[in-house]
Length: 343
Ligand code: SF4
Image (tube, rainbow, N blue to C red):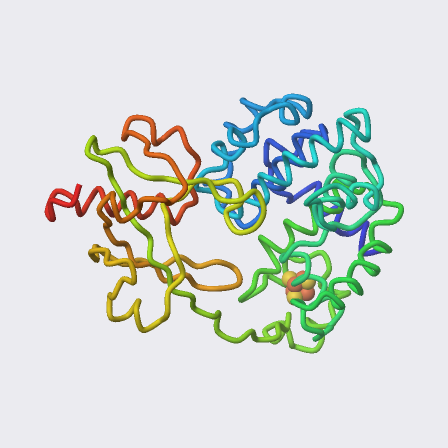
């Protein structure tokens, strides 16, 4: 039997029952796919539900202020996802009359929509015969094909895309794509795959050759570079805190933060602040491309004279959207303040 047919048949009998799989609205599928990237399902579901309750359709999202969209994303990380959702919603309204294109290539021309999301929308909303490749699917494919090309390289992804697009021809695309994702998540697991339960067992090269434990192969990356920052807690006489908004583009674009500056490793390690701040505590934050070591310092208000930003009272501060690292600083500060008298 053709690989596509085997996967569809298996999915109809064994696939995971998830409520959102009944949804065929491209807008809801898009939001769900973007929220769930880099996010645990348990955490993502709450964000998704709050987001679509406030922005139930494309027009509402396109017309909303970016600050409010970011507020609904607060704590989820990778804030460019929220900025891109907002920009692409505006693009869809202004350039496509508020209608999603059905073709993955046209979807990929929208801000922030990459190959995975474009194909997920095209397949799950419109039934397009295209394969949707995530980490689970890469693992299944590497094993079935007995292919040891590094799966973290774009060229491997491209080659696998060409192959999966042939597997999905002539079979129901939604069932096929949900099926192969589920197969990777529940049977062809990273360690100890359940080959005896797998519909692809007789087609699988890794199984036949006894190599399932060696695949998929990933090229090792070096350690992340480390950068050092001092973040400053500045309060005025009424206890209002100095905050400022980041530029729209780049790291934490459009979010709010407390003043901060990059420093040399030595100044960070020796707790020497170039502005004469008093050291409070340290923490770290991991980004995809670097590790941020954060030293938190207090500064008296006059030392911050001339800095851009605004003083915001403790009651109002929760109405601004901050990055997770800044929220972590606030939370540590609140825990430390009673013992140290820093507040
Ligand atoms: S036979 Fe085993 S290794 Fe091959 S796809 Fe199925 S579960 Fe994965």
